[in-house]
Length: 247
Length: 272
Ligand SMILES: Nc1ncnc2c1ncn2[C@@H]1O[C@H](COP(=O)(O)OP(=O)(O)OP(=O)(O)O)[C@@H](O)[C@H]1O
Ligand SMILES: [Mg+2]
Image 1 (cartoon, rainbow over the protein chains, first blue to last red):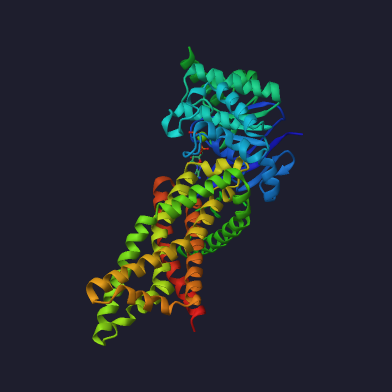
Image 2: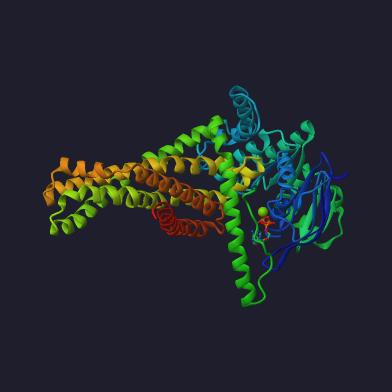
């Protein structure tokens, strides 16, 4: 059974549809990338998985629970198995980078301070941010904030991690590093990852399956190999545009 | 409970009438939502004391609410006592009753003016800051991030702030009363020719425990009101910086109105 399933999801804001009859499913343990033009509804799709947004009609099912009408307790227990990287980072401005990363461990686990410290250091090292551990989010660059948020999303060993543009605003080398990190977590811990990204090359390198959104609908859903061979005009355009940049 | 809410309707209203109906229903639902936040916050009070991380935040909030507002409160209540003494004293002098100046100032301060002015100061100094802080966190998705990390914003943000206000408000109200009475004595001594010792005897003579309790009760209620309004306005902020500005402004306005109304109601219930 699929771990995450969208069934005919329609989402409207002020009467206009952002998602229109979107259906797809994400299997346990796969890296699932969502691509599409800016403003198409990728972040909106991701927010449905944690019920930050609810569909106007249709259902979102996570691990057999219909998240659109489950109780607060069920939602709480589902969310405690997930981590979410916001497009904006969403670090707490009044806590340092290290405190931000430690937060989910302090508040939701019974680890002692030493264990928390070592986990936080490991997470910060993984995103190459050890030097900025004691800085406040306002004192570091946008890309560093993104990496700090990534460390916070990864530090608690969640089963499902949702990444909203983990590499936007990062240099190509760091982007590749982040992609490798996502793949590594997926392989080693069996984390199911949903990655929203504009970086098609990166998406193709890490994804088990790809979802292309266009005009509020699913334009393509399948493996990266099939995507590259796809005869859908928009998918071809997308691939061609990316090649133009990478060559 | 979850704090991040979506609008009830996701299409535009079809007519003027529908839009009015929707606004009224939205207002009602916001009231219910605020009440739920208040109840969940009260339920989370014990955890503020028990959890180490929350306790640190609570102590910080006590400092922000209690210590940092002291200078403003001292100046406001000092002048209020002085103005009160001057106005009342001049009238009393016409009837040669200056001896009662202390009682008059003490009664009006303890029963009414000290809790009231203290609450207005807290609403504009502390309440507005809470609304702006939480509002900014809301529009920056920080509140949503907390909820997804299974950290309840009610327990993590709202409970330490509201509890700090509830604890500090009566203490500060009492402080305002003391400073105000001193200010009145100062004016009596320097301008109205009332001996300070005599003023204090008159002031302390009128003190009734009931007045003290009612004053403290008022301050307590005001603290709860200010905190709840500020937190719910902050949590409800949407639409970026403008939204935060609006939420802050609304929190101050609603607080001023509620402080007046609750002040009247408590007086009405306690003094018949
Ligand atoms: N809370 C909201 N209220 C109203 N409209 C919204 C809201 N959130 C998103 N939208 C609209 O939904 C559409 C999709 O937004 P979304 O953030 O999902 O885009 P995206 O695909 O993530 O784009 P990007 O790649 O630029 O991040 C946009 O047109 C946006 O205007
Ligand atoms: Mg987005």
